[in-house]
Amino acid sequence: MFKINQFKLSLLLLLFLTFTNAAAALAAELKYTLSMPEPHTHYFKVEAELSGVKKKYIDFTMPVWAPGSYLVREFAKNVESFKATDKTGKPLQSEKIDKNTWRVYSNKADAVRASYDVYAYELSVRTSYLDASHGYLNGTSIFMYPEGYQNLNGTLVVNPYKEWNTVSTGLKSTGKFTYTFPNYDILADSPLEIGNHKVLKFTAAGVPHEVAMYGEGNYEEQRLLADMKKVVEEAVEVIGELPVDRYVFIVHNLERGGGGLEHLNSTTLQTSRMNYGTEAGYTGFLSLVAHEYFHLWNVKRLRPEALGPFNYNQENYTTLLWVSEGITSYYDDLIVRRAGFTTPDRYLAVVAGSINSVENTPGNKIQSVAEASFDAWIKYYRRTENSNNAEVSYYTKGGVLGHLLNMEVMEATKGEKSLDDVMKLMYQRYYKNLKRGFKETEFKEAIEKVSGRNMDKFFQDYVHGTKTPAYNEYFDAAGLQLVNTNEGSNAINWGLQLSCQGETACARG
Image (spheres, rainbow, N blue to C red):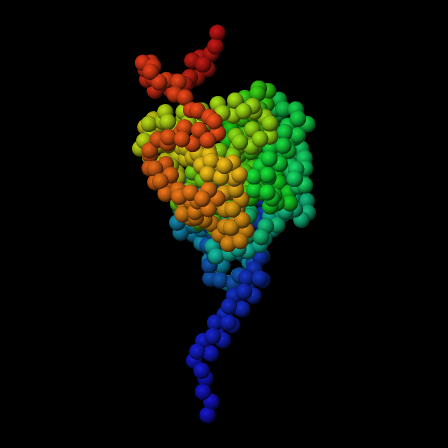
C-alpha cells in the first residue's frame, strides 16, 4: 500500500508554483514607447506594452508623487485618452477604478498595450514639460506601471519630435533613442531632456560626466566644466568612492527660478540664465551642483528606511529628512569651500546666515526638525502666510545641526575625525553591507561610535525638541565665537516681507 506524505506533497506543490511563477516572470516583457509629434500642444503620447502575462485583467497605475519631492502631486490629473488593445490591435475593455489606476480586462491575452496622452506644461525639476523648444520629463509623471510587475526589466523607445536630434538621460542606451532599465524604479528615477540642446562633457574621479544645457546662459564653458569637476571630486572625497560609471547633469537655464532634484546617476538643475555672471550667482550654482551631487550617496544610496523601495501610491513618511536634505545642505556649502570657491570668512558668513534663518523663524520654537520632516507632505511644499510662525525648514535647520554634529565629533576626537567619518560608516554599513535603509536610532548610534559620546540629549533637545543650542559650546573647540549683533539693540523688526506685483509696481527709475 502506498501513502503520500502530506507535508512533502505541500512542499512539492509550493516549489512547483514558485518555479512556475519565476518562469512566467522571466517570460514577461515590458516596453514603453514615448512620442511627441506635436510638441506645441504640450502632449506626450505614451504606450506601455506588457507581454507574456496571461491574466484576466491588468491594472496600470500612475504614481502620485516624485521621489525626492515629498508632496502628493496627483500626476494622474494630466492623463487623457486612455485606451487598451491586444497585440493585434483589437480593443480591450478598460475602466478607471480609482484616481490613478486603470484596469484593462485582458482576458488572458498574450500582450496588453495601454496607450494614453499626458499633458505636460509645468517646467519644474519634479514634473514634466513639452513645448516647441524642448521636452523634459520625470518618469513618475509620465509612465504608468503594471501593478505587480514593477520589478520587470524593460525597454524604452523614444521618438523625438522630427526636428530634434538629442536625448540626454541616465538610462542605459542600447541603440539610437532606445534604452533599457532593470525595473520601474530606475525608469522612474531617470529624467530625460529631449531636443537640440548642447551637451558638454568632463571626466571626474575617472568617470565620464555629461552636462545637458537647455537654454542660453552667460557661462564660460571651459571654466564651468573645470569648476564642476572640482566640485564633483571634492564630493567624492567625503565618502571615498563613486558608485556610478556615468553621470548626467540636466541644466535648465531659465529667465528666472532655481532648484534641483536628485536621481540615482543624474540630476536636474534649474538656474537663472544670467546667474553665472556674478560671484554670488556663480557660487550659488556650484553649491546647487554640490547639493544634488552629494545626494548620489546621501538619499539615493544611504537612505532612511521609508525612502525605498518606494510606494508610489501614497506618502512615504520619515522623520529623517533633516538628515537626507539638511545634512546634504551642510555639505553643499562645505564642498564648495573645500574646492576653493569661497574664502573661510565667506563660508563662516554662510554658516552664520543659516543660524540666523533658523533662530529668527518663530516656527523654530513650535515645530521640531523631526516633525518638519514627517509633515513635509502637508506643509513644506504648501506654505502659507503663517508658515514662518508655525514651521521650520528641515533643510536649513538640518544643515545647522550638521555643523554642530561635525563640531561635536571633531572636539571629542581632538580633530582626528569629523562628520565625514560618520557618513562613511553609515554608507558602508547600511548601503553596502546590509543593503537597506537606516533608522534614526542607527544614525544616532553611528555618531556615538565615531565620537565616543552619548547623543541622547542632542537628539532630545535639538532633533525632537525645539531648544536653542548653546552654539558657542560647539564652536569654541574651533576657536570660533558666534556673536549676537542685535544684543542690546532696541530696533524693532516688524517681520514684514514685501514683494512687487506687476511691471508698473516693479519698475525702477
